[in-house]
Length: 419
Image (cartoon, rainbow, N blue to C red; front, side, top):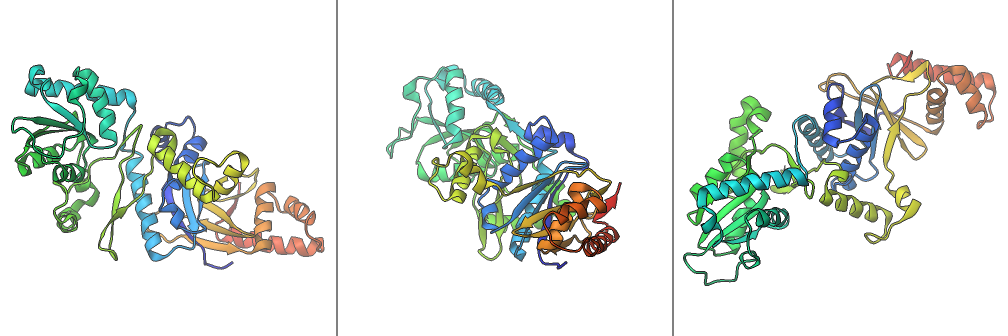
């Protein structure tokens, strides 16, 4: 057994089974883990981990891990993913179409109270692509807007009295709205993100003379102070340096996702000195954009043009999720053990109860891997020997001794246990 393959625990669901079911909107833990794994696989970052395997185990406690030959940078990215999952699963906000419609009603009410229906009937309305157009479509019915009020601003020459209402599904730092203002020379703007931190809305009003008001339907909380604790002031200074004037607010908004889109996350690439696209974790079954991302990644893996992959060929190349079931016993893998196949070899990892402790990961050669599988599938030394003799031409006593030696080593290390 050689310590070569890396194993990174992404999710430890000992205390969050109900939260996992709620996040994935699945009826049972097996389906929930499958949906979560599919969401991880839909990330371009995952497919940069050449040859990586994603492993899920539902019982007795949900576990998700990544196995592979990872660089230091890749291990850091996987650690970021693990932290994101543990934060998002218990504290998430998912907005389906019905909830979006209800939020749009609150936004329409806020606009009427602030400006009155007569003024709203004179304003022009546009949106920040693409989610903003979905929200504006709902808002147009709620405010009874005329088609000529909705559209894209012209290139120049706007009347000084012309007011434009700019709609978006959410604003997290204000970068997209800032870019919108840089592109369009509009004299008077009312910005309406459906969801946004209150501090961001106030910051936009202070920073932009053209913005008459920034009105949202619902506030998003800043999770950065809790996430970083005593290190928050230091983190905030670093964040301001990294943002370099982009956006209006340097906090971290609580996680939110829509039925049409999960906003992109970003991480700071130290070597490149810039932000890059991070992980998205919402299951594709809950989000149109994520479904398209998953389809695109699947097609690329299959070596086919997007949308042409069909039938069993589609599933075969895409299949990099290992689902692990509990064997019949009494000999079983420990509750904290996961394993992944790499060709004829096998990587077996024993994850500690505490995240601060190191993970033991071993690589089994082809013969040891077959022994492992035989022990798990039969649950006993005697039956495992009988199973292996069906495929190996070897003296039964010699095989029994070798298998007993491996089993003793596995039990001593805590990888296998007797139930």
